Image (cartoon, rainbow, N blue to C red; front, side, top):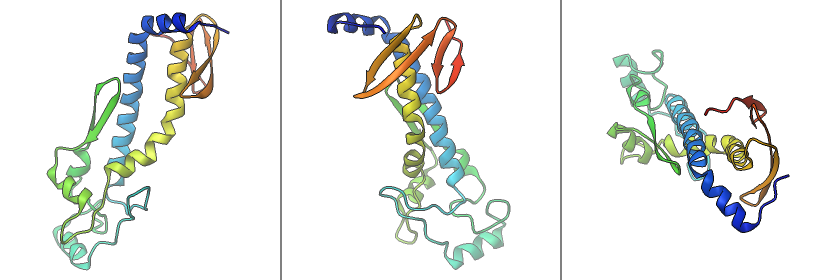
Length: 186
């Protein structure tokens, strides 16, 4: 087990800061892609309530009629909320501007109306619910990957991350993250 004084640990963190930032950015790219994909997949399917977001209501009969008449809907099915041609789902993207943030969104202004609702249509949020469904699946893995960076590659270290005890095992050929051994990139 590696043991540090507070000053030595601070020095160690300064030395590995770039590696931590690179790992954090890589983790956020994984998370951004997963949230964006969840949001894309939720378009066209009725969504259940999650967190502060209510369940989607059924499409109005007039909406179903108009979509059917125009041949709109996922695979020709008009009862696919928010889905007409697939363009809105395809417009959802993610960006990672730095090692602390991932942004998921769209440049399609229609998505704003769908998220918030209008006077004639109830809200059918996509982005917030996608984040609430997706983020918890990755937090443990990301904590372990950062702990592995802090531990280094030359032994075994026990590290506290966000007051949660994490054991990070390392070996010279790679770092164990989420049960898989990955070669270190140099």
